[in-house]
Image (tube, rainbow, N blue to C red):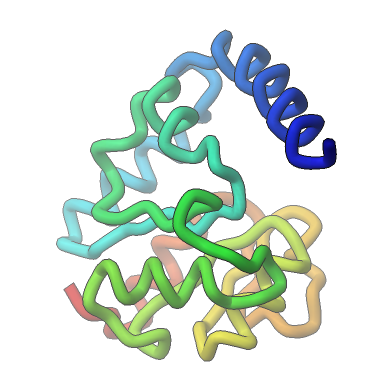
Amino acid sequence: EKESMAEEKNEIYKKLLSGMSPCDVKEETRDTLAALKAMGLLLAIGSSSRNAPYILNKTQLEGFFDAVSDGNNISRSKPDPEVFLKAAQMLGLLPAECLVIEDAHAGIEAGAAGGFDTAGIGDARNCEKRSFAIDEVADILKIVENARLPK
């Protein structure tokens, strides 16, 4: 019964998501992703949601990402690091070679537990376990420019 209710909830959520479009993504986000790709960096999504591919498609962001690790290929949700560890593995990188950007405390905790550097934005900006605090998405570029991340 629980699984049936969860599936029903997800279907309602997907109907709400169906109205998403590229307009729902700030231009700053799109510009930052384009700049990161232009630097030759590999990008991945690490989301506990099973709807990440759908959202990426609706917002036309899927072309920016080299890998998607999400609720479809994990068995444990954040703050367990599984989703980020799988994303790094898909990219062929070690956690120490990656940066996790998160807006939730559970995501920062997951990244830190997995051995990743983390950047907190929004609510996660004040999480004690974060490596960097950022005010806006474009601040990721400042972190990357000062790091030697693999390409």
